Image (cartoon, rainbow, N blue to C red; front, side):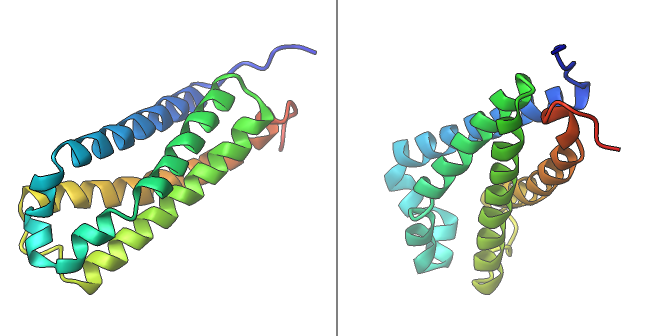
Amino acid sequence: MSEVVRPRGITVVAILMVVTAVLTVAFWAFFFAEYEAQSQSFLARECDAWFLWERSFPAADAWMAVTCLAGAMGLWKMRPWGLLFSLVSGGALIFLGLMDVLFFLQNGLYWPVNFEVVMEMVIHVWVLAFGAFVIVYVWGKRGLLAGRQVR
């Protein structure tokens, strides 16, 4: 059986999945390193529930990061399980993004806009857009990842 050549787009998606996982881990490292400051942040002052809400995400974000890394590795190696974990991570990204956006909308946390809010907006847009992109793009390449062409 001949080796499947990895398309440039799959390489880019794999790299972006690794970057997403690494930045997620970095976010939580910073969050817990600056735990006291986070509990007094703008968002924590604006909404009493924000800090408790934020603290409920590490396990789900860890799952997303692990599936991103597994998906990236599988895509890099052009293995069928790369398709599986990429789709799982795309779904996890969308789920996390929707939960965040709905919480922010329900609690009026997108206004007033400041650096902290902009950073949250960037995260929300990234997880929703990148999650959807991963699902659509990788699904379109499923034939290559399964070792056969899909027309």
